[in-house]
Length: 457
Image (cartoon, rainbow, N blue to C red; front, top):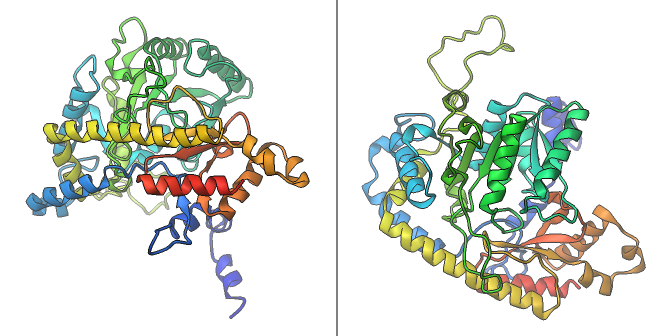
């Protein structure tokens, strides 16, 4: 019986074995053992996952009401495999109201997927072949290389900025340098990816920089993908009253700037509506119908199967539903986005709460002389430098650590105190010792997490 695990492992494919033995379970161990002051006081406090829980009570109440008029049609496959007509119309209507597009977004410009991760992967499949690359400015959302690369085979080309502000016009030259180096290495570059507003830096791109990046993409004949999932999580920060606010690339007249067929926007319910679990994301592309056709086809299975046995046929009418959005989530999202009055109040209240929690978290950091990246006015996290705290208490062995080892040593101290924040190394940060701290949890939860962070040092 003791040999059974090894025997079972031998039955796996090579990739199955790689997945089974290579998976890091740090995050799983954290979310399976979350702190609760009464039910689980010894659990982990997680300020490392980009979830916004500040409006969950209001959202739960609204969803309960929206289920009241649920039709039995919701238990079928519906009227499409890439979001119902109702959902895609609701998204188009919502985007037209909130994103101020230069040209109105129509239902046919929208493809819905089971979360934004699906949208990212579908664009990787549609815009690049295995071995091609996408430019991504550092630091970047930790899962992007896997979203683009695990199955679609797209390489993430990290763009380092050094002392250059990544939100400035000077940053465009850094993208160009990275593209030239990639081509020297034999990696064809097919797209430039932006997270706008930015994760993990919590800032917005000035309009002139967006236009500059568009011109760069046009010059290089590559696509511009703008992930705008934090678009409405922008708030007033008294520390930077003149901070750049969010503008969608959809709002820019592309005439004389870029072929509009090269511009694509992503959005979803995870962040602005604090609904990661709904699994609703979308791709908006107003001038590239072949791209949308490719994504739609892949959502229910490609039409050719060259690796299938010779007896298989391509004429089957049945589908595989690879990225099919859940129909109940489809119904909830449609109901919510169609309710303009409610969403106006929801978004405004959410922005006020984010601003309040930001002020609370930064007040704590200032009190303890913890450096953090300034000019923040979007999303719900801070980019924090923990090296000064660590250096005050580090052992001789810890002081000798550099790079990833340094960040790992800091992380060990934090995990020992059962507080989880995101290691900046996983975000391709250019300098070790930086971490992403999420502040969009209830005030008592954030306070407990920050208290534990200090106790680690």
